[in-house]
Image (cartoon, rainbow, N blue to C red; front, side, top):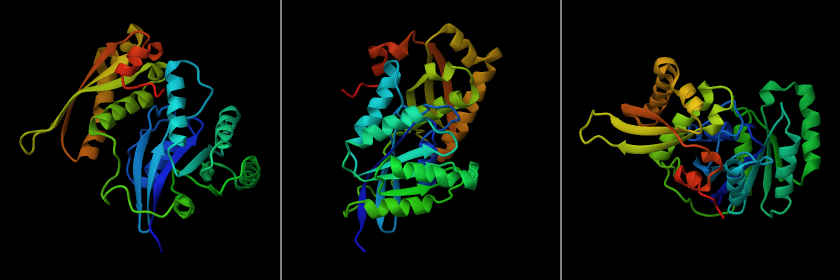
Length: 299
């Protein structure tokens, strides 16, 4: 059988499980997740290696009616990704539809000539009797090349989904070595892991006003010494800074401890993680601040 390779965009409304699905496909965590929508802000790449194919998966922010500079940036990232791929994987949530955002995605798909596979996610929490009408409704919504019900959380049907996607890839050689998992830098992944902990540990709207930058990432000169990482958590208001730090620094310490453990698993080495909190007033609406914090406009 000929070898197949290509790029696939993972798109959908916010909070449908796109990042969880990518991580399950890879067998490793490269894209952060949380129960809150709009956790993913940048395009995150993961490489799925199979005996007969190599799929370069591009996780994207959720497509939604965007308000504000940061949200518009996120939707632009997803739009731009759709133009650069061989295959589109549209993920929807079987347990909690998002009609407005889903309609936006379907409308964008109409202008694309690339094959589209639909993954109906979270079937592990949907009654079997309810699933068939959902699948029937989606089969009429667009001319999908394949429709596969899956559970990104449990892995149910994920191999079947990969099989269908593999069939639609063009023939060609692999783009990356067999041991390549992602092209994201360790600095980027470190910043994302810190931001993930903020999303998971802090309620209210505070996480949406948070950006994380890594100011230094130092590999040890001697074996056995820790990797030293210094990162800044940026917020928009003094009140948000107080919430991130917590009483007597307890919340910041909890964020740092959880992020450090994930970093150590990712790097396979001890990590010394130092966190600071800085107020960057109205950064989510300031184009210059957005660029400085890593959200460079695509146009």
